[in-house]
Length: 420
Ligand code: EPZ
Image (cartoon, rainbow, N blue to C red; front, top):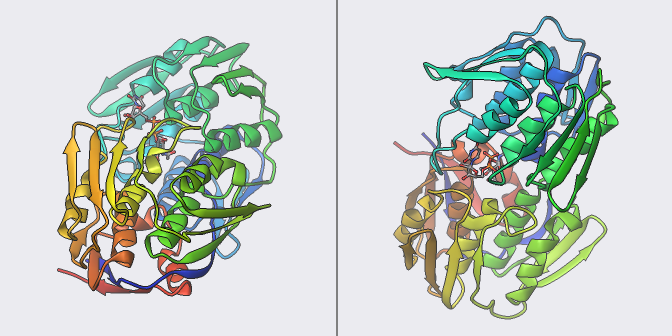
């Protein structure tokens, strides 16, 4: 099995260029189900989840080509669409559930596999179903599949009991072509959702959103696909910032929308890092020892759950007790046991981890369990004394484009290897 071997202890110095956002690309590519004409989407990252989604869209009958060299997906006029999204494809990428809303909106019928859980949690889809029923869909679940149908979808008030990125996207997909007005209350407003809204508006959708988590949509007859460039990946940008801090190096992170990472950059400054941000890049390093911190993951604009594992790795290098509370997913501490194998001193009490940091970690053989846990192990290995081997790196390839070459360019000693 493919693994990465990393010799720790080297400061990372230089520049990193951030790729397109995986979590903005997926819903925007899925919008193609709603759009008849040809168009193209730019700045698409070459990551496994994008390739898996492309396989699903092609299976559904979408005519597309991924020009990998130029990071763009070109959509041609569609043939007849299938209504069926199989488990065989859905099981490897949960975001596949997002095809349910568009298939229902376009074909008024859909049979989509329940995506199943993953390492970080059960990942239910009840809020997606809640939204679709509000718009008039009939939904039943049988043998692991969601059967959805609707004579027509009519605008409604969808008041989410809980903030959900995916369910907000499903509600948007299903209401942009519905008849009448939809008001989504307690919506997620992550930058990736705003990017989806901006793309759909460029294609003619009538959508307004507010920081008070209200999204208002007036259904239109049709959408007309237009060329669009996906936002940069804010989580990737923060990951490399942590790489600079954990190795006591200095990195210039290029291609970033500063306003989308401002919340985390302020956090870095609060714990003593130096962050100089300008136009579409920032420079990050630590002139002095970083201060211990406590934080809880929250929906945007709070500190995101997708950087929790990375900040936990950073906490192992900071003297004192850091406290990290995970409020979004029920099982997102799988990296703790692996970090402990490297000598980290971490205690878990319910959904809080207490990291007693400051000791240099020791290189070890560790195993990735999910996308962000895997990158946390890479970060820890970069700071550790000696060599580490991180196995099951297919998790990493789901969401980090060319991470090995990007790290190597900044001085990391990292190479591919095979483990049993
Ligand atoms: C999106 O997942 C992201 N994935 C996740 O990124 C991210 O961690 C998450 O949002 C939170 O920001 C993509 O965008 C492809 P949610 P999503 O619905 O939409 C519960 C990564 O590392 N919930 O906001 O699945 C759910 O179990 C990935 O890039 C329900 O209870 O997340 C969780 O506890 C990981 N019922 C909470 O809500 C539902 O119907 C938030 O989940 C849906 C969700």
